[in-house]
Length: 580
Image (cartoon, rainbow, N blue to C red):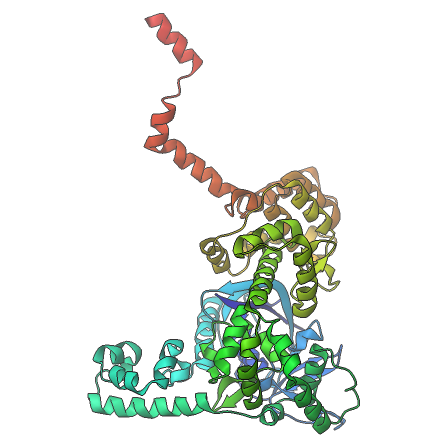
């Protein structure tokens, strides 16, 4: 499953609300977001453009350039991931030269999304008719959705003949290293037809010559090694400072650029420090680092860039642009250090950290808030040897501080969003969710198959249900800007087992103006419709409507009829007795 970010685009200064929501892989750059916005709003995909934020002041452009004062350089959009600016600001504003009057506000929603494959997926559409302006291309929702899916492949898989761009590249990587296997495979027509169908009709010798050239070029890029200094040169000073903050180093605020590089190199290459950090990695991260210690990896070959996020933030690996392709690389000095330290890795400790972290992430994804006592049961189900509650608590304190993907507080793992005042999750239902967990003696935990089924829905929230609800009742809300807060609060409470009537009463009292008796009746009916179609952990991930269907099917099944017999009313029994 591939992690995706949920991005919302609001067209500012429009005569009526115009909004798009798109799911994008977490490795998406601002340069790619420019192309996505242009597709969503029908604008030509041309330069120049820029992304800006006022709090704090940030500016990202098509190329490095001085801002108006000449005192500070703006940052190129080609080297910035979408998630990077949102670590410092809550929203960005996009300006396109072809339509300077209409800016686009970009916000990152706190709704997790996992998809089976990386893509750009249109997830929300509001405002069908945008006034046609010079340079605007005609489009509709269906056309935009199709174009976005094609756009991802155009940006990240521009040439499928290139080895590192192919979907099968992880399977092909081993055979690049083995000359005997390469000769065998390139002489196999079935292999050529499956992996390189565009060459299937060419003479075998010609195909072999073409692929030999491609593979040698791929090998050269994958085996290329870079020094720490070469990797540092690809980064701006702010990112170098982020490395210092990430590792909580001290005494760097007044360092010049070259002094900062020297200090970082000195710190990262300390053997004890490096070994300590290796023992704090998850198993997938260690596997990735082990591969990087030998070869570079194309970003397109990763299952998800989440695998590399922690390693990139720590300065243990870097992105290098080679012929418009992003390669993940580990500096030469760190490769040598890794080989020296590999035998010192405590894999038992890593296994425990990995299990605790995975279970904590999944718990807040499903429930928003989860007690550590229940979490420990699931963790020990995974581990070969159980850990104690005290050990689990200490690990969660450590991981929550290091990973910043959840909060551990008062013996609960809690979604970060509950404690973020700017987040749509920031609502008072945290107390209610905790109470539901306290009353529940059992809890739902999905199997891998179940989880993939949930993940295929992109997010846990059924936006179609809530869209119908808000179209009818939006005008009665106290504050229409808190739609996200209402959506997620109701959704978490319903999924976790909250009673329908208390949730309905709470929603009415907090978010809505007093309604007439007739409207109140319609409101309760609308909430019940949402309730009927919401997967609930009480029903093992099924909706109440699914459970009704299962019960109906069970009653109609031959086995059920045989077991229960025909149901005869009391009156029929009496009539039968009289006749006899």
